[in-house]
Image 1 (cartoon, rainbow, N blue to C red):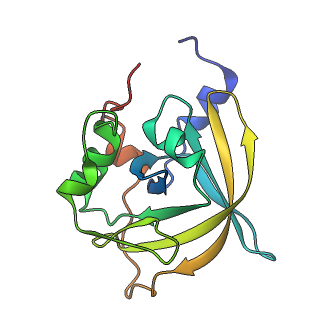
Image 2 (tube, rainbow, N blue to C red):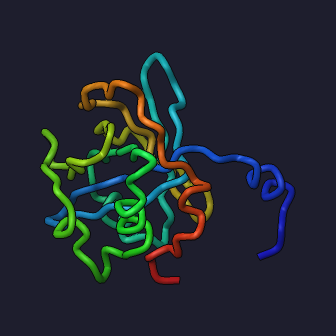
Length: 163
């Protein structure tokens, strides 16, 4: 891939990574996401971007809600599972503790924090689609604040989705 001006800017960023999970049509899926951010305070909104190649994207298209999880720095194995395996071939939820949220979204029991958001809208962003979320359920606060797993910590994980 040719380097662009944005690549030169993005290489210095080291934001947190998230595991996003979805359930729809009798399927569950989840993936590691690096493109996500709170985007409004009032009303509270969060945007998460899913690769169109990803199994989670296909499940999320039929979902009404998504769950967004943050991981502690020592939870790299969880990041490897959700970032390095694909739901097309592996039931990731058979390998982790989880429970359904009020709307049925899978919640990872070991995540240090999470929220569930109702999908308000979707935005085509090229090879990713943005899901604008309105929080409906939030985990209790973690004290002390965890040291989060960041993009630089997982940069070497090969994406599990088919190329």
